[in-house]
Image 1: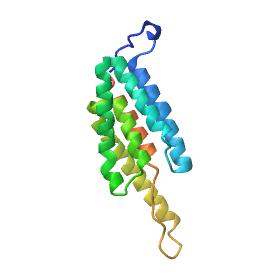
Image 2 (image 1 turned 135 degrees about the horizontal axis):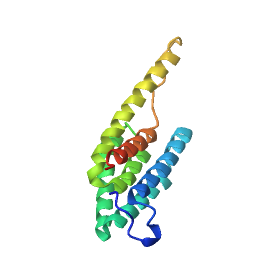
Image 3 (image 1 turned 90 degrees about the vertical axis):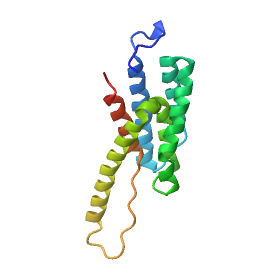
Image 4 (image 1 turned 90 degrees about the horizontal axis):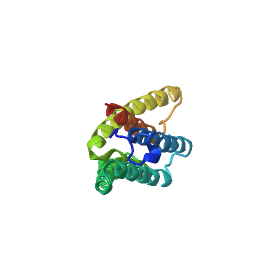
Length: 165
């Protein structure tokens, strides 16, 4: 999806740049909010969905709408199991659904794998930090949880970079 936008008003801006802009702005905002508040407001998944629909429709016209919606459903389903098992929050699932619209089904699996890899590294770092921090204290240490928006954003960014020609 690195074709130039069809509109002559945007001849200087490629579709790939639009995708990067959506992923960086929305992913960055979701990361900041998740780190600060440990929640992702509905604004960011909805913005990702809207940006994804716009990019897909600019690339493929009305058929892009179907591709974006299919990507959103696939993105939702990818993380729904983890939500149902209590491993992540609903905001994480909705954020991946929004980014699924941007990526489409073709790049979504790659983004999910990158997200899982980054999330695993972050989880290991969090457990190590938590263990070292509570090593000398007696009693059971509180459970470790990590905000997952950083892993999702990184996974999406890596999938977009990997798709570069």
